[in-house]
Length: 330
Ligand code: I3P
Image (cartoon, rainbow, N blue to C red; front, side, top):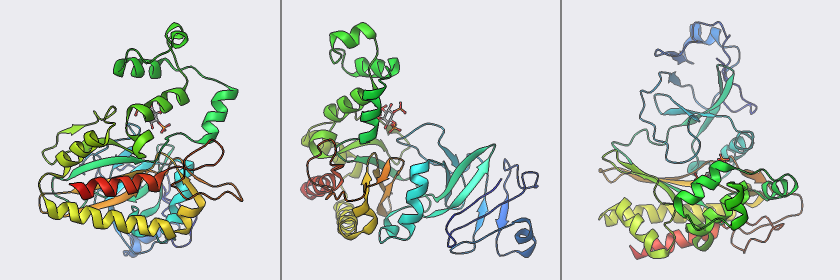
């Protein structure tokens, strides 16, 4: 097991693969303030010393969106997420940007069974029976180069055809029906139009309520009214909570508008995670940077202008504007 870091300010924990700490099925403390533990660790740098316990499935991490199997549960306020190159490049930059308070803390990398994970703050730690909502931001969920690649080398996907007909049997064209398959961009673009991504520049991906019930059944939640109803049902009757969410969202927006990171990146498939509990404790974070890409030299975007292939606009701030205005109506 090892945790590495490129940034001298970040955690960098490296343990020998045959170390007694390499099997973390049971609880294991890595106490960085303890000299004997320190000796087992070749290279440790972190913002603050921390005690990390690893034990599978103890912490109730909830995954509402994204790929299954991407997370391992940690304890004491940490989760492990499979390393994605784009996200891995963004996280240290975000930690050094004014957006840092709105992003889960990045604590370095870990290797387990040949797989590398990033160690991140568990945003649900500190909440009791949290209600969680994942809102995917932006007008599109695919990168411009994914479109280009699909044009050059179209790969037909039967699974995406199946997902399409399960939702809307009439959606495929006669050619697609004959092939029983569609390309990924075709599916993703169709998904934007049946949800609110195309019109409102955000869509609800999943909601988990405090009683543990969860739903990802929002693929056709498209109109402003449908979205408003879903938000109402997530937030409940608590007006103070609406105010809290609105203040946080406006702070995120104001920070994004002046952030260097935000100005220099295209954010695609990135989400805002809303979390609250019955005590009235509520917060929002920016998550998922697996398709966050530095803009090519000389390209500037305002995250609000209409997307035309080649201009790299992502519609993120247009989505935040719409979310703010819908929440203001609640
Ligand atoms: C999935 C969703 C994911 C996408 C995934 C899709 O569709 O669009 O964002 O992963 O592609 O299947 P749905 O939400 O309708 O189930 P990426 O964002 O990583 O591309 P995949 O099947 O190729 O993983």
